[in-house]
Image (cartoon, rainbow, N blue to C red; front, side, top):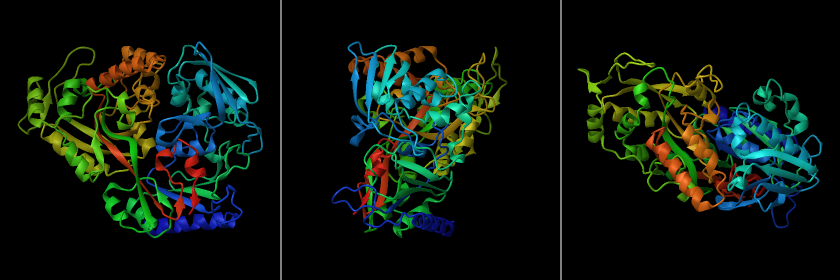
Amino acid sequence: MSARRLLGVATVLAVLVAAGCGGSSTGGTGGTSGVKEGGIFTEGTTNYIDTLNPFNYIEAQSVTAYQEVYPTLIQYGPGLKDIVPSYAKSWDTSSDGKTITFHLYPGGKWSDGKPLSSADVAWTANTIIKYQSGPTAVLASAVQHVKSVDAPDPNTAVFHYSAPTGNAMALLAGLYILPQHIWQQYDTNSGKGLKTFLPENSLPLVSGGPFTITQYQKKGTTVFKPNSGWFGPKPHIDAFALVYYTNADSMIADLQSGQISAVDQVPFTAVNAVKKVSAVNVDTYPSGEIVNITWNSNPYKPQNRELLDPKVKKALSMCVDVSQIKSVVFNGYAEPEGSLLGSIGGDWRSPNVKPVTFDCSAANQTLDQLGYKKGADGIRVAPATTGQYAQAAHKMEYQIMVPTSVDFNGDREFSIIQEGLANAGVKVTEQSGGDSTAAYAIETGDKCDPSTNPPTGYDKFDIALWDWVAPPDPDFQLSVVTKGQWCSWSDTGWINDAYDADYAKQGTLVNESQRKDLVHKMDETIYNNWLYTQLLNEEGIAAHDKKWTGFDPQLQGYNYSFFTDLHQS
């Protein structure tokens, strides 16, 4: 494995050099005085870009790609605290708060030479609005409460809102602008063609960002080269490549030997060793990655319906030794977490949402009181039920689905949870979820459809171990458990009309204190229904070769400057 990966990196570098990206200190694209131009930056990752179609992605590394190839009006600045310009150089908000006018940088071009203009902005936003309950739901949160978008001239885009939207700017940071002249032909079959289009099959990618993609490998190496039509500050590097590793040990070995320039997440068990490498700098930062137990909370699920009871889920969670997971799986580089919003959400989290308490004795008492008695083999039995979803008496035995694409040892995490649940009288076995695409297919089921009555999907899994990467504003995380994200971002299948109404309302509250109160209520609703058992919030730990400067790992996927500002020391 290591030898094949090493050869893969070397081959990519040879291809880039042959294409004219030699990495000399002169003739680079940035041209900034005092900065050494050129060079090829390679970043290793155990994550991957699952698709170049932003209507159909799951993996966080895809966001890295989108931020560099698809323009956004605005973006997060350093520290992820403020919103700063990107394609929009400035903006105005009407006195009633219902209209935002963006003034765009002129002169931009798509990488195929076609003009980049406000028409692309309007088409992208209006198309998402048109199909937001279906094929474009993955990006629907970016245009929450937007009625329509106008393009009165090539350098002006006007967003019309149904109500003042307090978090409009944070949401629009996730609006990836697509080239209308490429994408409009796929607006077929009620928008379904947009979701199935695979831009990765037609390279080089038509890009309007600082880079375009000339080589794509889902589980290999994806190559980015500067887009000559980019309107913004030119990259200092000649190219960069994201190199996918199936083996984290091989990735770290390549970093230590100088075969790659950086890694986006140092394996937690390897952090101490990497810190000892003199040529490498370890970069730590607050991370939005939250590790959880995901409970199937679909009210229409046909089996093991005892797991819909929050009291049962809470009791089982109390038998999970989170401190052991922190120590063994994360080598101490994580902190207990109770909220879906994660630590990066700061005081958006309700103060009443706390990490789970480890008290298996109390949990067993609860399960006894609820009527789940242990059999002779020590495994609890769920009694028979009657009614529409009647079940025969059955042992509390379940599968826990574990994706292979997590950036930590999911198998070891499972074994700790398995041991804890056994102490509660529950038997669980591990189900390999495969990569993210396969794992999400297990969660949503074969025929997921939110439009039927009742909706179909979320009918075959009970429990999963996965994670979420939470952005600074809570809107996206709050959206993932709404009915509107059924078959899109929802991984629980939960349906709650009152919660959905709260979600729609929170974005319209321009008074931050009022919005925060409602967000706290929603945070508590998610917590009290035990849709998830949040376990830990990972610490972000990246690393890079010291010969590179301008490396700010927290900006990856949030600001295009993560790659445009990189330069050799």
